[in-house]
Image (cartoon, rainbow, N blue to C red; front, side, top):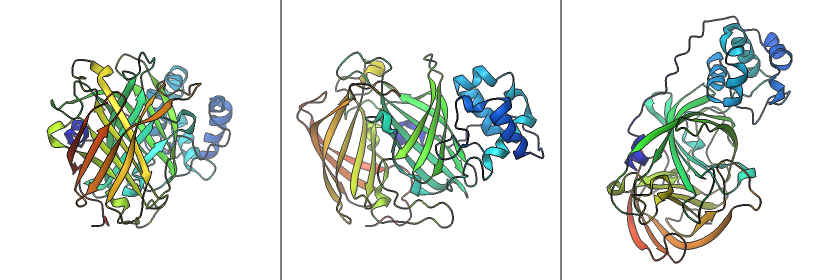
Length: 381
């Protein structure tokens, strides 16, 4: 999708210009700073653990201060300027009474579908390409399906973003760059290009819980932190040691058609649940001139029989959501069509679709798909 929207091709790390001297960090003092001096407990739990944004170095803490608006306004001129305090708080968070170190990030097992239950109806898909950047460093490619901050219509409220970064084995988080694509048409030319609209941090406390922290630079001043839970069961993720493999789960990841680069799909083929889930990132049939309002996304889901290579999945369109907010009533999800996905192998597939209603009503066709990036180890025939 220009390897999912010209992002995968830009395999480069987000470099933070931080100067953190080597200090003999004191976790006990860090606990006092966390609880009593800087009063981090005004926003965070007194006993940080699962669900706390992973921060195991002074640079992690300083990055959070720079990228999360409430932290920036409170700590930019205080904690953010004190390297000793930053190091001590990080040592506390990284210790047995602070944040768990989390799973090894250099593994395909973290690939999959993640969401916040409170804002069900929106979420992220992510794929980890282990050792792609360098030995011990994975490339991370994600996609985020969500809504506008103020919905104005039945379809033009859809918003989606992609994000990418480098995940280093032994580190607790991934710095990511957030992108947006506009100017495309549903399953048609022209291809579109990705434009950076923000930065963030993706972290995992274990194989089923994580956090996405984001800060947009598109003039919207949006920033926040989203607690993430895995949508489907963990299949191959391990806390440490040699990662597991699975022939079915190996099909999970990013897929696209080169001719319409800038739109595409993320699949999760999950034999443990067992279920199949897809997200389709695309545009309105005449979305080229509509800017961000021309974006569209759909989801698909179906029971999965382990070993199957053809899957028939209803397609759904979700309306009524608001960007990173719970709504009452909750977003409405209705079936708008059907897709048949046939895997010819681990790097090629075909998706046939028919829309009977919704914003793409009347559309039907077949898309020859190519896998984005290398085939995961253990992917089956």
